[in-house]
Amino acid sequence: MTIAAKQKYETVIGLEVHLQLNTATKIFCGCANKFGEAPNTLTCPVCLGLPGSLPVVNAKALEYAMKVGLALNCKVNPFVKFDRKNYFYPDCPKAYQISQFDLPICSNGYLMIETEEGEAKEIRINRAHLEEDAGKLIHDDKNNCSLVDYNRTGTPLMEIVTEPDLRSAQEAYNYLQNLKLTLQYLNVSDCDMEKGSLRCDANISIRPMGAIKLGTKTELKNMNSFKAVKAGLEHEIHRHMAALESGQAIIQETRLWDETRAMTFAMRSKEEAHDYRYFPEPDLVPFMMEGAAIETTRKSLPELPAKKRERLMEQYRVSAYDANILIQDPALADFFEECSKHYKDTKTICNWINGPLMKELNTRKTRLADIGLRPEDFTVLMHKVNEGILSNLAAKDILRFMIDTQRSVDTIIEEKGLAQVSDDSTLEKLVQELIKEHHNIAEQIRNGKESAIGFLVGQAMRKSQGKANPKKIGGLIKKLLT
Amino acid sequence: MISENDVKYAAALARIHLEDDEASRLTKDLEKILDYINKLNTLDVKDVQPTSHVLPLKNVYREDRIRPSLTQKEVLKISVEQQEGSFKVPKVIE
Image (cartoon, rainbow over all chains, first blue to last red; front, side):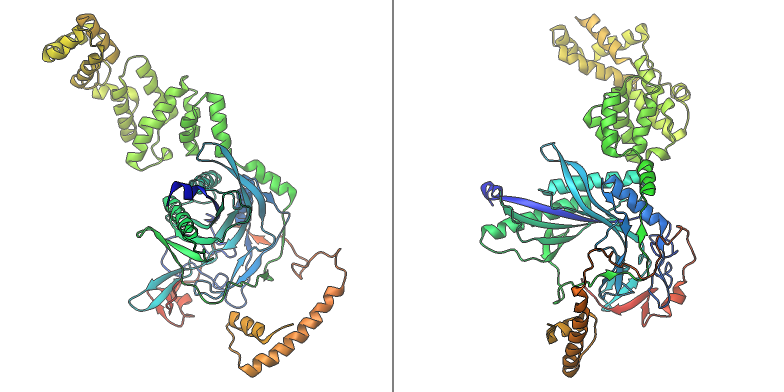
């Protein structure tokens, strides 16, 4: 398809996210809300929908839902009720799902994202409601049957629905990233798409640029990672455009993203359209969300990522790039703020966190909280480099030993003999040797090729196992050769 | 007006099998019921709150504390067929 053809259309996307809340128990009964247990070991008459059982709402699930709504700038509705959504499927033992239809707990919110052009854009949230999850189905092709595990049945889910405000796959991706980060700050879910604790479906349509009427939409499912959402949407947008360009119509249908084949295909659907016959859940009484409780919850919200980013840039003069890395983990941002009490230069702290520290965390596949590193010890490294006692290289080594052995910087310097050598006579001897070994290079420097000095400094660092003071070495080379 | 097709559709959604004579009888019954319900539409209810529950109760909830679940053995007693700790059902494909 030509670029001109692509520019004829505007993409319209709305996302529907299902979020598993990490309460201790299910939403309507006391069964544990846990992943990975033996099948059918976390059920009871309530979540199995056995006759005579009655659901009772988990107060924590309501509180979490309120938190999510407030963090997404939603209105928490004063009157909340639950409804039955009726359908037959083996993963739903009651033959209905308790959900919310016309009076969701939260509505009319927004989340800010950054567009591809780097501009701030508001993505409106239509609603966020509470419901129960369904069981897990495994298809056994060999025995031509399906196996049902009801452990997940009745675990609390939040459904967060945007308005069709997203205009590209990249915007959808940015929205999901921001949403995930915000939710992680609230600590209400582990937000792991691969584990299914955050799931995303999309509604996609395209329309001629400037048109108001929406085109025919398709619903896209089965995108199991953030990357898959982007790839799936890109593919589906392209499919819509190619169809319209060749004069074909888009059929309104649900399609599945096939990651391995990198394409979408229509889901086999039953003949009858979905008709869920919602009606008010008679087993649950309504809830009045008191203004005072909403305010208490609002005040209990942590500083959210967008706010934190702004404050870090303002208060510590941190660059947007550094701030973005710091806010990815609130513990990391807190760590940075603690460090700033022990070392004045916040840019250096950022460099140390975003460089060597992140590298250590990534190679260990661990989080800051798990390595027992104290800000006052971490900043000692910066002081020692600044004072010329440690080279940058040696300091990075020491960081690794600190994490491995939990010993102090001074102990490690002593044990490993890593103190930087700044003593003039020792360094001069080293430089003399190098001039002999690399006389061609030395000659070039004598002839005014300043850029060759770096090479000799590098060699000096290698020879001294990172202990030589590079600044002094550079000075000595200049002194001896120019 | 309720058609026989409406009745058959509702029956299919509820997984109820109807013979033709049942469908036509139920169509007439349902028509009468809806006529009766329609009388409510003549009332002025603009100042009446919709009823969402018949009991005068609100805000009934429980604390987030784990209670013992049934064992797998107990649960599978109500299954028609079982396999590897799961309920075995005819194959369903999304």
